[in-house]
Length: 118
Image 1 (cartoon, rainbow, N blue to C red):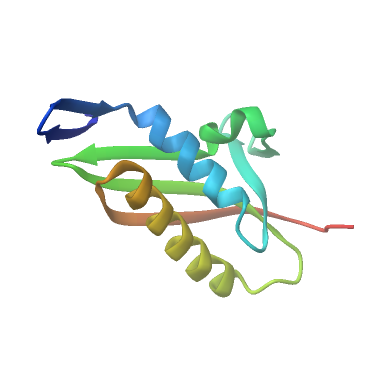
Image 2: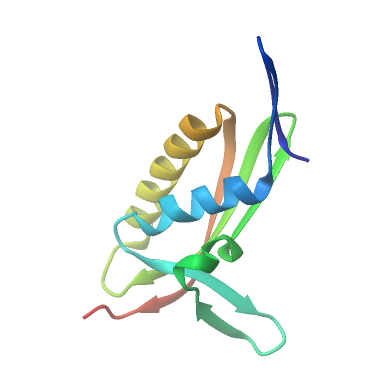
């Protein structure tokens, strides 16, 4: 299902991929996040995604104009995962709600790995 709004001048539909790309961009701007992660179930390998593929680390569902977002991330070594997660939830929720005009009901964070940053 897509994000859906009726306005005075017409109807607006927002594709889930658009929301995923925006949420992914907002995620990698957050403190302590090295990048988005892709998990290969077959091999059990986690890969750091390049910027052009960040939406692959994001799952978006929209039901009754409420957005749920799953973020698969890699965090920087030495940072507090709970502090990074709290900041990430607040940042992504605010930005996605402002961008789409829809309510973010839930954000789930999956820390898939840790990387040392030079």
